[in-house]
Length: 169
Image (cartoon, rainbow, N blue to C red; front, side):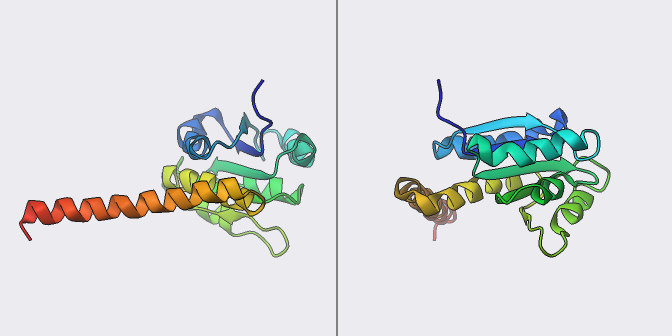
């Protein structure tokens, strides 16, 4: 039996899995257990509300919600829970995710949704942001995040070194 999930990744459609799997990869990198599911703010509103209301009782501490088009999933979930909700806009229409971004980020005062970038980079950042939230009560996780930042910085140094060698400067 695996660890009890602390993060829930939810998406409006199974067609969003290609994007939302990036959040799962980020959580895997930090050793954070998660659950993953599909529910829709529009097609299954009762299921979505029930999911949101019961998440904390299942031990969930952060919810990552991805949706495309009229992307109301994160906002509907946030309306039914006090857990932190991170919205990932999915590029699923001819507007390339701009509609999803605006629907996710334009929440009324009192119902916050932390919104990340459109698509795969946003899903990755959602996983990292969830790790940062959880690291507030975990020094071990905070150390993993420090190592992640150091790895990023080292990769830039390596790219700089390679570029200078290629250019002969």
